[in-house]
Structure formats: C-alpha cells, structure tokens
Length: 168
Ligand SMILES: [Zn+2]
Image 1 (cartoon, protein in one colour):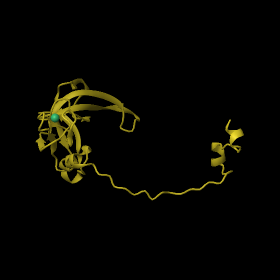
Image 2 (cartoon, rainbow, N blue to C red):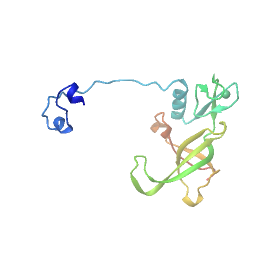
Image 3 (cartoon, helix red, strand yellow):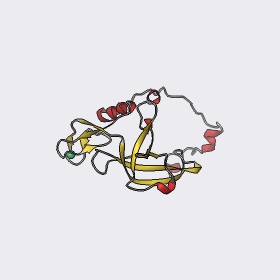
Image 4 (cartoon, helix red, strand yellow):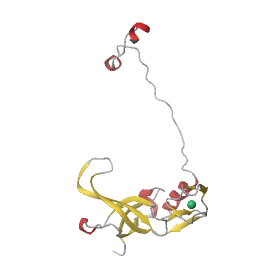
C-alpha cells in the first residue's frame, strides 16, 4: 500500500477541477519547424507546380512513389527524380459515409488507392474519386488527376482535388 510507505492524501480529478489543491497554469511557447526531408520536399513542391514525381532506385530499377530517399528492398539510397503522368489505375476503393473528420454524411465520398502510371507496382496514393457514379466505380479503372487552379495550390496532396475517370 502506497499509503503506509509514503503517507499522504491521494489526489482526485475533482480536487484539480474544483481548485481545492494548489495548481499552476501556463502555456508553453512551443515554436518549431519540421523538415519533410529531401524526397518529400521535392514531392510537395512539384505538387504545387501540378506535377507528380517519383524517385528511381538504381539497384532494382523501381520508381518509388511518393518519392523516398531509400529503397526499402535494396537498402540503398535512391537516385534521380522521375517525372510521372498524373494518370493511374484504381487498385482498390471504398464508399465512405464518414467524412475526413469521421462525421456521418448523407452523400458518400469515394476514396481509392491509385497506382500512378510509370511508378513501380504496389505504390499506391490514397485519394478521392470524383466525377463518377457509384455504379461505375471499379477496380482497374483508369483515372486522371483533377488539380486545383495554380494560385490555390500550396504544396500539399490536396492540390489534387480528386481523380476522375480518364478520358471522361
Ligand atoms: Zn531498389
């Protein structure tokens, strides 16, 4: 028993809430900067220009997407950045009645894992599908990015509004 070895009065949450014990309040001045690293920085700045890039592993030849600084299969530093088309294939998708804040919604959103043309297999980008009817959704569907106007882009994956059926 704590009480016998270290005698005292245990605190309850209500003691803090009601102010029956001494408390101190302060707000930390926590200012910080976070670096995304070489590969992700390039990926984000290319998004702002409306372009997709991957990064090639000179050992296995795969184009990693989104670009990474190391190949997880070869354990080597990756090489050149490679410009990719903004088209791809739906690998899998989900019809969601929850929005991005997990609130229930009446009209579903379509979320897909999309493999980008020119990138190695199993390199999916998760994004929204748009300009498509639920009945027309399918795995293997060819899609194309719909970008925000240039002045609205900020170097984020949301610079792509969604992917729509290619050629549609
Ligand atoms: Zn490799």
